[in-house]
Length: 186
Image (cartoon, rainbow, N blue to C red; front, side, top):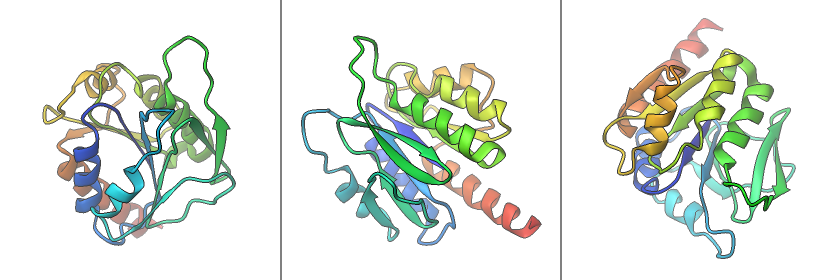
């Protein structure tokens, strides 16, 4: 599962993690818009919100349930065969859209098991990513009007590809319920 956020996204990401509890049996990858020049304390801050292990993503790491992987600054992140791949951040003169990029790789890698969550942020990053997730049979969720900056979630919702809209605690409860149902059906 991937969580994408930008402006105003720290608090809802922490709320989501807090509500998921210690063992949701989900691997989470957090993609936030980060300053490419400065070190980020995001992993440390999010580790205060959850008993799950929160680490900065490194190249070649296999994602494991009950772990949170945070994209580092000045890199982009992809997933293939359940393994995280760091790639140099591309400076193209266009907008940097790391959430779309990761969601698209997640959709290709996990197909119907892909889950993308779009939280607070300006702009539209995540919008193309939720379309990719939907086209591969996965699920997409978005933050409701509780988003401090509604651009990203509203853009994602406008696609018609969002399966569930709620506050971060509501999104977490939906994810836990979904995980329990999937585990029960196996």
